[in-house]
Amino acid sequence: MFLKTEKTRPKPPPEPVRHAPSIISINLHIVGNLVGDGEIQIDGRVEGDVRTKSLTVGETAYVTGEIVTDEVSIRGRVDGTIRSRMVRLFKTAQVTGDVLHEAISIESGATIEGQLKRADRRPTEAPKLGVVEKASDASLAPTPLIKPLAAG
Image (tube, rainbow, N blue to C red):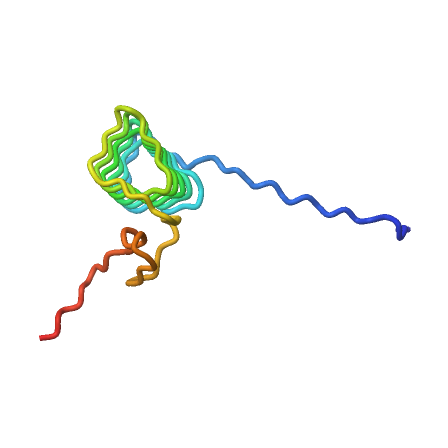
């Protein structure tokens, strides 16, 4: 039935499944953290941290909290720290907080009240608590919520 000369062809790798972005519409106000591994588009208001692979903050959006992504495009308002490999700030962007990035693009007209800090590694890879691997990682190290009391 099968000839020895026939070779079985390996199956091609499956194509990645592209999902539609999760959309927070203009009339939606969320209080709480958003965590995902895909794409999120915010056009409404979010009071909480956002952690995802890709984030778009629309012109009508207002985000209060920390943003941690691989890539973020901001056209609206953000109050909080942004930690992302690639940051794009469009002319309508209003950011109040520090921006930690590997690469950044800023259009004329965007406003930033905070520091721009270049990170040498992916911000989504959180360092171990209390351990700073090198000086440039100090900005990415988490701040402990409780500090030990000094021995008296």
